[in-house]
Length: 398
Image (cartoon, rainbow, N blue to C red; front, side):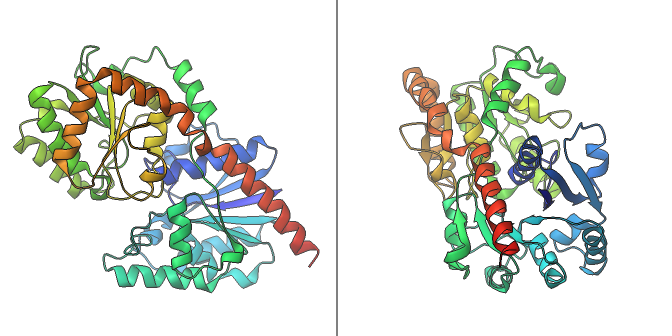
């Protein structure tokens, strides 16, 4: 099949959605399909040294459009020119704004369309975060969903599926099957990089004797970074340790990153908060996890929780917030400890529990790898590949 994927964020940007679309493109390519991925022009420099098994097309201001910072005229023209020059069998668009963009020109093309959104929904108050005002955010999402310029809606988590139905998606063409990580690749990367010297990223700030608490992922308020810093300051008084913020080298919001630095300084732990000196390569992340004593994901909400899945895949003790998305991954008392969101004290208490109670930490960690087998991205690709085949067949025989 000749497939075009309209990505939102894309690897090597630090976000679950960026990695997810990349993994899908790579897996489909390995299966023999002709894949083209549409990404922002800004990715060209980042991807120039990557040996990619698929084609990449770049659109100027694509991410600015997705973030609502520019209008759609120029981006629409670029996408239209790209689509009309190639005869694609199917188009799969990821995230709301790329779907909105394509909806404007949908009737010009005969190929079928699949829509998947990675944007994190939240308790009927947030669809994809373009607007701070919930009523505006939900209204735009409803319009995109109810325009139904797609043939099938495929979601990768239960909370995303429920959000789509709440917004008016047709249940007859709305499906849900878990997405996740490439488990085999993740374990292979760990094996291939087992001798990685972490001084590559942290200089001499990290030693083999340090107790390391890792908070992976993007530096945004919804990830609970503030509470993570506050909890770490409490833990550090009892267990001298270090906190690793993997995404701090490329923060989503510079102003929020400054708030985090100021908070760490105010709490007296600036010298204990480790910031990489460059973006950590995706293939090196398994070794970062493995070196960690505990991983924390104190998010306010998640679409699913890739970093929690990654930690559990490697059998690392995990503390996660009991929120939509993460509560589909974590099972309190079985593969992790779960705490309420926005509660630094409870987060600190659970971290301390795992540092003090090695038996409990080992028990939770040992249950991790088995508990996340359903979050293997290859299973999601199995589902969408079959969906592609079926919907193309139906279109051709309609």
